[in-house]
Image: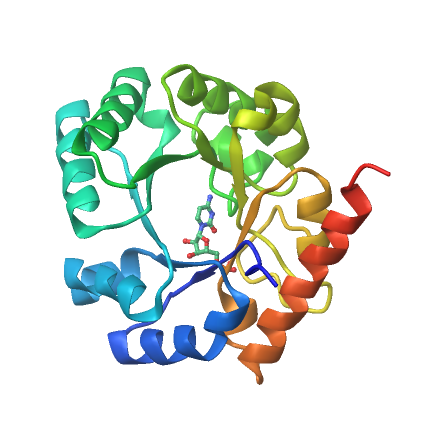
Length: 239
Ligand code: C5P
């Protein structure tokens, strides 16, 4: 059976614990996500975990800087052999365009993935930082800009995935964090849904960290999520 479209967030303080946790659930996941904690701790060589485990690496650096700096960082991410690197869509058109064209020019397998609005932010948090209106409005506006500049991978919360799918169509690959099995704790995530619901609403991939990392039985948790995704796909398949 094909691996489930689950990106396991390796939010760990050491490479050894990340490696052990990823190896335990490798049969049930489709990608490992290396984020800021592990990258800052271990440095670029941690990307080699992907080769060790024969899994693509989603390098979640959420780049947000001037176009020149982001472009050069994207080139380095490509050299490391990552499959995906995140940039904040709010970095603007020139930044997005240069990130995409540099990833293509490097000739590796790297795709640029635009983060729309962090799933930990709700309506009130957005107003606080001057982004008036509901999260869906900000997410779709940012997704449109990124798509127009050539980005094809997007991070949005399950609450907006349907709107982004309607806006961008089938060429967009939608990745949703903020995914929680029905019985799991939400933590600091505010815009959440079950994996099944996220897939039914149009997500291609789900990002899951704590519900696997902190489970008493991580393999069973990963299996449960993979099954929930299969159920979601079965429900949304045309009859
Ligand atoms: O533990 P949890 O399942 O909430 O982990 C979600 C992961 O997805 C974290 O690594 C977080 O950095 C990441 N993420 C997110 N929201 C985004 C982009 C990435 O939660 N918009």
